Structure formats: C-alpha cells, structure tokens
Image (cartoon, rainbow, N blue to C red; front, side, top):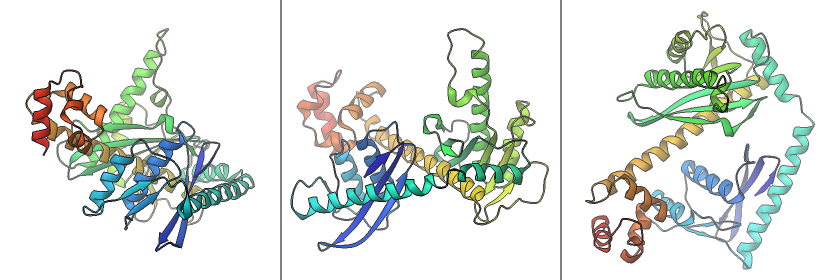
Length: 362
C-alpha cells in the first residue's frame, strides 16, 4: 500500500501454487484521517465482501488489530474453512509483499502525475452538471442519499458529501431508520431527509447562541441534493424540502441507476448526460459512494443486532455488560475463546456469570 495527500493505492497480487497469476490496484480517497492499519483493515473487509473467491492465506504488510475478527469472518465466507491472515517476515512471501508495496508506490505516482495534468477535470464535471440541471452556479457541495436494508431489517440511510468534486468523509453521516416498519425505501428516504433538514434548522438556531457549535455536516445547505432512485424517491424528497420551505433554495435531482438518467422536479422527461462525460462520471462516483457507505453501515448494524441477540438471552447480561464484553473481546467468537477467568475481569461480571456465559455460548 502507498499513500499521499489523503489518497491510498492498494496493490493486490493473486498467487496460486507460488506463482503470480494476476494483479490489481485500488485507489481509496479521503483517507487522510485514518492510520495505515485502519485503511488496510477497511480495504480487506470491503474487498472480500465482494470477492467471488476467498483464499486460504492473506498476506499483509503489517499486523491488523482486527486480524482475528476478520479471519473468523472470512472463515464463514469460505464455508468453515480456515483462512490465515499473516505478515511474512522472510522468504519468498516477504518478497511478494514488498513487491506489491513497490508497485503501489509506482502506480500512485503515475496516477498523481496524470491527475496533476488534468487539474480541471472536477471543474469541467461540475460545470457540466450545472448546465445539465440549469443551476445558477456549479454545485460545489453535493449531498447524496441512499437506503440499504435486507427485507426491512436493520435499515440504514447514508449521507455522503462531495465538495469541489471530491469526498469529504468527515461530513458523512448515517441514519438508523426508526419510524418505518418493513421494507419501504420511499418512507425511509423521507425519514432520512426529514432528520437531515431538521438538524439543519437546529444548527441554524444554534449559531445564534454563543458557545454552541453546530454539526458541520448539517449546518450548510447543499448546492445539489442527489437521491439514489427515480421519480418515486424524488417526489418524497421534494415533499420534505417543501415542508421546510427549502425547495426554492436547494436544487434536487434523482439519479436512476438503470440508465443513469436524472429526474428533477417539474419536468416529466429525464435528463441524460453524455455517456463518457466528466459530469456523469462524477455523479456515478457520488451515487456509488453513497451506496457503498449505506451497505457498510447496514452490515455493521445487522452484525451488532446479531451479536446483541445472542448475549441478551443470557440472564444477568444487560446493555452495559453486553457493551463491555464486546468492547473487551470484539465478537461472540472472541468471548467464546476467552477463559472464564478473563471474562470475570470485566466490571460487574462474577465468576459464576462468566462460567454461565461460556456455557450459553457453546
């Protein structure tokens, strides 16, 4: 992995029977606030969440704090077969890891040279979006929203923010859906946007009070509000803006995934940007980032609910003790592997309760 100015390049080598059979690189943006371990751990999870094949061994350049948890998750993805996550310190495996790191540096340098030669690409993209949507100025702050759910369970809404055409991950927010029963993406989108603009109004009021600091993610209105979906999602979003008297202040569009068509209020026909235009490419990136962030948050929420349900049925385990156990051991598997004596070191857990926890989780 190589890093520079908030961007990271991860080079993946595919090895079979000791031979390099393929390679691929991935660019991660907005990583300036994260340590190398965090970037690497998040990449491994995202990569193997989508990979069709999980290998027996994953070689990494450095240790991960979550290595055991990720290894257990990969084992489940591999139908129970053990997956080893290791950091080689010598022999041919170490050479492969070092070669991948060198390739990552070369790739990132080459890409940065290309990006520097095309500094105006974001400006071009924003201008194309401005013209396509007939905006008064380029949309320097674009917010995009998406919903992720599994049959109405643990539904989550995502908010991603792009400024000057690049992601500002410090302003990303997620919303656990509270008011919608079952799977209803339209109602979920309405809830998310209602909460977003309610917080804008709260932030606006807070600015008048000395000493109060509003959440920067909600304090500023977007130059363009983008929702993932078609006319149905657009109509719900428009209704929310109208309820806050913001429809004349916040331009809005829906981006339908199938044909990448844009829909705006008051216009029946869709708007289509040129297939290979910078404007369409940027909108696709923003939409895909909102989708990725929603899925990640949804999986995390589902995982937390699954962990909670197994611990909640154990007598003597309430929310505080459950949280303490998961903080200490990371997962159900970690608790199962820990000796009762170690579990009993957790505040509020007696040896008798620790032994019962072990028994219940067998």
